[in-house]
Length: 305
Image (cartoon, rainbow, N blue to C red):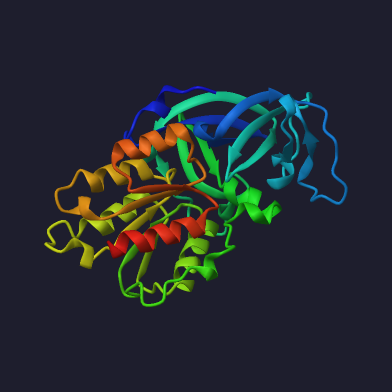
């Protein structure tokens, strides 16, 4: 699927594909979507999780289908078989079975709120741990799902690839008190990133669930003459409520003092178009989840320079 917004940098906007599961509206960043398809017959996988409906092979590519009705514990509300949203992120090809697709909504990340800090949202019948944002569009509430958590809960390798992290040779290479900033709206991946950095000896880590909070923390040091003594590096996801990673990077790199802070973009959305956007806003490095080993090696190199 093509979208003009993919060619723009630092606008803090996204195009959200709105879809229906049961009777509620949900959303996914269009940058994650390869294709929307009508229902296809699937081949079940023996002993797979109930949420994994089966597999099919369109155009010689094996795709697993996750039934969002089962993930969200809701009934199919339509007479037909619904639709598939085919995605690629975290280096996996996966599809999501939904009731229907409504269309594309272009909105600002500032119009997306973080989920409420309560156990569940009774109006949507959805645990907040399954959502990364809440948007209101034309009077409708659209819940932006944590697709990375959904997939990693069913496919453990889709979280972070920790292989090789313990082998990174960082003896006498880092100052463990150097301040690192981590911004990722997925609670699961935020925690995994912080834990991986702590394993390599970093202790002074400030983590945030959206780019706005990360920016407010970083910008308090805008008048520091030695900015790297305050913040050694920023590691940011791209899609986050209120302010996305491209906008965060642009604000840092456009500032006369803060621009010296290395910024690494670490996202499931890293592809050629997204790399171009990251380069345009001044990111020092970009890695696709789950390449945490490469991220940590690059981070150590950047803060040693």
